[in-house]
Length: 344
Image 1 (cartoon, rainbow, N blue to C red):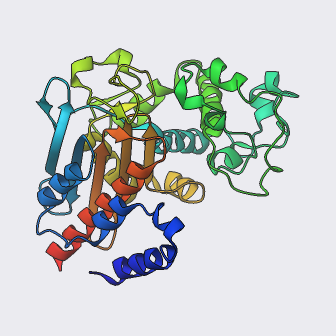
Image 2 (image 1 turned 180 degrees about the vertical axis):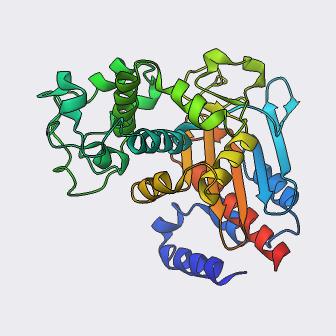
């Protein structure tokens, strides 16, 4: 057991000091954390299925070695199709990395300014979004705008909206959560508006810009704007505890294979995607890793500099209480620990 694991166990022991607190202990998480670390990534991936995830895909890109793919569980539970490491997956908020890169390239090309405001770019929102005249693109990129998050609307995920206007309507005329640049709050509305601003500036859908400036140069042929552009059988099924149906046909943004996300993330981190000026702009505004969640789909993408490894993890089971999100984080952490142990 590692020191980090021991600390977690100690905290949990303190929590369970009374009978009433014992009822609330997430024993699944405790067990997943304290199990002896397996010898291989595949064993850890298989272990995740035993803890309640329907399917999992892991992509490992270790410098100087060919990428390795791992999978376990189901691609389609009902049809008993095994998990496919090359499947398409809804990457959810990992797409914010692509948006941030696109904004960076437009700023570097002097087509946008990070100091431009919402009111300047989308004048129709003046008076409908509080502080629109003072909220800059920089603040939105950094989640420091104070604009309410449309996905925080009550029961949003019971019937998610698909269009820009439908999502925007959920926050129009609502009070700001804080004054611009005075706090931080993760907010999907920020990136909804950044996408719209790019569409208006470019005169065509911003995903085409992402295609031209990011995907094509990296030869990423398995990254798509939506489920409308793909063979639905190539998409990994998604399951939400308590919901009776497969969620793969729901249109919830970008899809990609784990390999495509891994190649993108490696290029973002090693400097091959951005030139020197772009790298400076990007580094001052956004992060180099991300995770994502939409019903049925959880995703993690991170470059680990200490071992020079990119690890992408997709799993296709979610739950209302985010217990499985915490479980997936533990599984990801243990996979990285296995890789560190192998490299030691």
